[in-house]
Length: 506
Image (cartoon, rainbow, N blue to C red; front, side):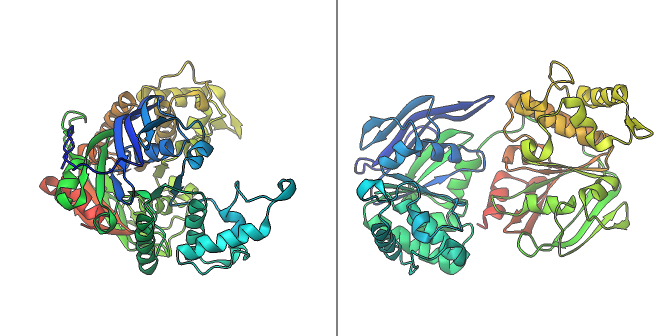
């Protein structure tokens, strides 16, 4: 096993594709910091890392969507540059994503060859050749699907096979599978494993990204671990176990990053019993006290955000009971949630949390118009006073409160969204990935303010995929997996290893 700097993997054939010292920086965030990756013909390499480790950025770099700031991409040992996704496709790099965009009104064959359909005389599409080649590709992956059928007539499993066929419609030499089993049944997953074996036998190099350790140990030949955008280690799957991989994924010291908190929870403010939804989550229940920060942890697809949206009234659970301050409460809309003292800071602040074309002060006061108007008329001075009160508390950095939110950094946008909900004077605030995509300075400010809110008696629910954040800020942590609560952790039981084990079902 390689740890931190040196590789102990035995020598192998020349990689079909490699990344060497790749760096990619976005405003305020270094997504990749000198990472390396080797993909070998006829082998499956598992790319492992918690959410935010840099896996998605690597996929986009391999497929030409992103261009690295530094480092090299090598194909058969030759330095290569992909200026576009088309360049990567021409080099035989193809990806099967968890959610591939397909078009219901087009035929199966049209979906498979969209953008690179075979053409005959005068540049017209050669329909007969396209359907024949589609049939050949589909049969090659064991899919008995008529290429002339409309995609809308297929079930979810067959649509997924069409997405795979689309990826293989180019002459692929490197196949990237990004969480390919997320929407598949057990039988369909077994069929995918068989497809992987066929692709290996054809000499294709496969990059397999999954949070599920049973899948990784089932089909991978090699592993590479990323953490916080850095290369941590690689080697042969046969030479490592689950415990060692978990340690590589989460091995960080977080004790000096977060504010010191003297937790003293008060009376129970929220009780949730038996919250269920037919497709997203089942039998979720917990209690929350004033002054407490309750963390929710889970991997992609665990159902955390879906549950929070139901608790806030965005979606309706099929069953479940909510009590606020001991009173049975029915929440059927966000307006009712806000009236009962529950507010929600969503993960996607740009689309769900703020109106980026409006100035800061209007965003902050939007849910509190009753406090900033008289006889139905808005009072501009009162709007500015309320917005200034809460943005000052969060140390918002902006030229003025007239500045459009869309012109702010990610961290300051997040502060606007938090300020907006705090201005409603809630009892419970739900923070869904509160520091996602913001720089370390803004993260520290958000963490400090969360600690202050809890100290003032506000009850905080924090959904986070960042293990250090969960460990550093939570009094208790509820772990979700596949829509269910699987563990409640606190005190000495709350460690990186126990979080990952419960979340991944190890």
